[in-house]
Length: 145
Image: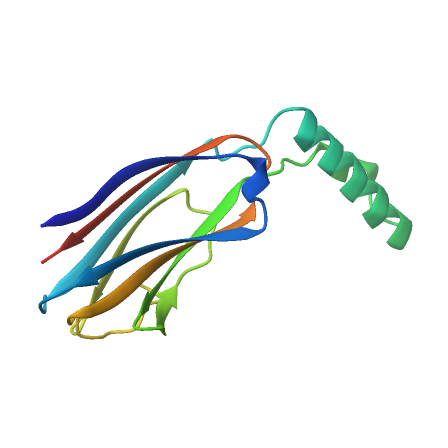
């Protein structure tokens, strides 16, 4: 059963913030399944260029031995997803994958997430915007088994 199937739009004003997406369950289930994806992964545009220039200048001032070729590195948008139940942290997996499938259940859970019953209660999906310098589209699907 799918309980959330939404597409969201975010921009640079969400950089270094969090968005909570609450939902409640009034009965017990075997598993919670979350699919999320976002893009673009690569940041491009004036704000990215400014952030790269300012960041590189600060890094270079603190570490003069750093190669100027580092300025050619890409900057990536980074969003991670966490889950809480009744205020208790169930897990997260901070990584650079822009497409993820997460399973939480008593018998098996994805890396970074606790094995736990999916019982009635109040849940939250937490989107953490570690770095967002361009407009991003995020798709979120939450299902129950």
